[in-house]
Length: 136
Image 1 (tube, rainbow, N blue to C red):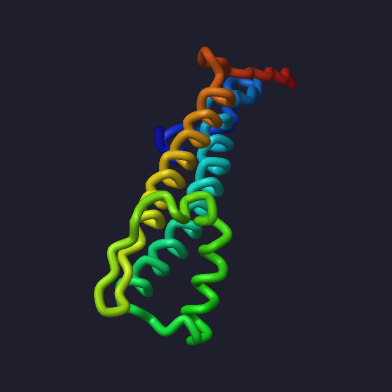
Image 2: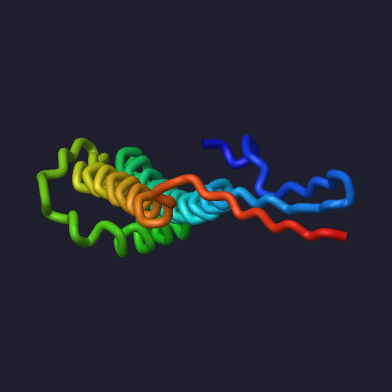
């Protein structure tokens, strides 16, 4: 559901009566989308760092280079559980880090699982509307 498809708050004035109607489901959907957006942003950054590491290793980038060293150090924190998991093909200094690719897949699945869990926990089980009437 797109957040812009539903109105969260409506004010209507009919014959001296003003009432406000709030769509609680749309409001909750916006909260869920915001939380899940943050989760995807964090895991997307982790995926990008690992992806850059894979490219640098395949291109046999100099580990003494400041940028390459920075990427290797940061990505190492996220890849430690996967190091040594499988063999790494090497050719002329170029390394295909299969363990990093496996790590990327695992982080993708974890991000997907967390976002689904957020949705299942936070989504109301039925549609509800809150209506407030003020008489003048």
